Length: 524
Length: 99
Image 1 (tube, chains in turn green, yellow):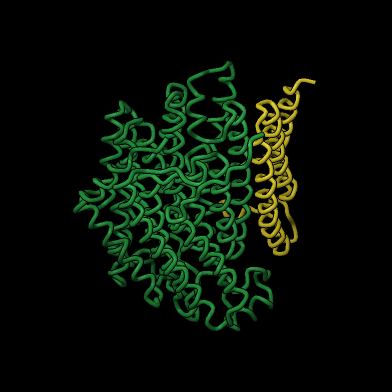
Image 2 (tube, one colour; image 1 turned 60 degrees about the vertical axis):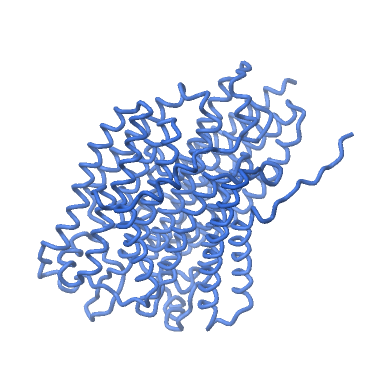
C-alpha cells in the first residue's frame, strides 16, 4: 500500500505567477467592496503594481536559475528554467505596456462599455453612460489572463498546459466583447473567438488524452522518453502530437487555424486587441517551442513537412490578404498572421539558435504590436457636431495624419518599419536571427519564401506611411476626418516605451541576443 | 467487452461533436457540440486510465469537467448577450465583420 506523499513546493520559485493571480483575486474583491468613485484608480494601481512586482521577481529568479540551475516544481507540473523565465519576462513586459494602454482614458472615457450587460442602443445603456459608470472588471480579467500566460510557457505536464490554456483564454473571450463603441461588432467578435477557441481546445484535449494513452503519463518528459519505443501505437502517438500542436497553432494564429484572427482583432476593444495580439502569441509560441523541442524531436521526420507547409501558408496568406485590407485593424491582424509564419521558421529550424531566435522575434513583435494598437485606439472619428466618437478604422481616414499630428504619425511609422523589418529597427534584428537560424537548420527554401513575403508585406506597411505623410485627405469626408484624441498620459508612456524599445533594440541588439542565447536549454 | 470499444465510441462522439460545431447554425447547438467533444476526450482519458491501471487519467477527467463548467458560464453569458441584442442565436446572422 503506497501512502500519499505531499509534494514539496518551492513558493519563492512560483512567486511571479502567485503575485499576478493573487492580485487578480484581490481585484475581484475590490469589485465587491470598494466604492465606485475610487474603484478604477485602485484597480489600475493594483494591476500596475502586480505586473511590475512580477517582472522584478522574474528577474530575480533568472539570476537564481543562472547560478543554481533549473528546477522542477510542484511534483513536475511546472518548471523553472531559463526559457520559461525569459518568456515570462517578455510576456510581463508586453502585458505591462498593454495594461497602460488598457487603463487609458481619452476624453474621460475608457475603451470599455459602461455596463456590458446592457443591450446596445437601449435606454439603460444611455443612462449608464450618462452616469459615468465604468466596467472595472476588465483589470482582474486581464490579470487572470496574464496569470495563465505565465504558467503556459512553464508547464511541463499536459494537464497544467491545458488548464493554463483555458485560464489565459476564458478572460480574453469576455474582454473581446466589452468594447464601448461598435458594440455589435465587439459582441460578434467575442462569440466567434469563444466558439472557435473552445473548438480548438477540444482538439487540444483529445491530443492530451491520446498522448496519455500512448505513454501512460501526462508529464512531457515521460511522454518524450516513451516516444522512441514505438509500441505498435505510433498512430495514437502521431495523432496525439498533431492534435496538441493544432491546439497551440490555433492560439498562435497559423494559417489553416487563423480564421478567427481578423474578425476578433477587428471587433475587440483596440487596447485588448494589442494586449492579446502580443501576449497570447508570445505565451503560445513559448509553449509550442517547449512541446516541439521536448516531445517531438524523435518525430521531426513526420512533423517537419507539415510544419513547413503551415509556415509557408501562414506567411503567404498573411501577406497577400493583408495587402487588400482597407481597415487598419484588419491590416494589422493579417500582418500578425504573417509574423506568426516568420516565428515558425525559428521553430522548424530544430537548432538551439532556432529557439533563441524565436524569443528575440517575440519581444520585438510584441513591443511593436502593443505600440501600434495603442496608437490606433487614439486616432478617432468626429461626428457632425465635432464630438469624438469611435476609432477611425478605414485607411482613407488616416490620409494626411502626418501633417496634423506629426508625433503620432512618426511613432506609428517606427512600428510599421519594425513590422516590415527595415534595418535600424528591432524588426530587422528579429527577422535576421530567425532567417539565420532557419538557414543553419537547413530550411533555406522557407527562408526564400519568407524574404519574398517580407518584401511584399513591406508594400502595405509603406503604403500606410505614404498615406499618412504624402496624401491630402479627401475634402468631402470632412466630418469623418480623423483626429487624435487627448490622452491622460498612460498611452503616451506606453507608446513611448514601445517606440524607444523598438529603436534601441534595433541599434543595440547585443544584450537581448546574449540573453536569448542563454535561454535555449529546456529542463527535461 | 474489450476496452477498445470505448475508444471507438469516444472517437464517434468526438466526430459527432466536431460535425455539430461545423454544420449546425444555432450557437447553442454548436456549443453543445464542443461539450460533446470534451466529454469524448474524457471517455478516452478514463478508458486509457483503466488500460494503464493508473489514476492520472481519471483525475484529468475531473479537471476537464471543472474547466468545461467554467467554459459554459462564459459561453452562455456571451450567447445570451448576443441573443438579447439581436433576438436570435443563429450563427448565420453574426456576419457584420465579414466586410
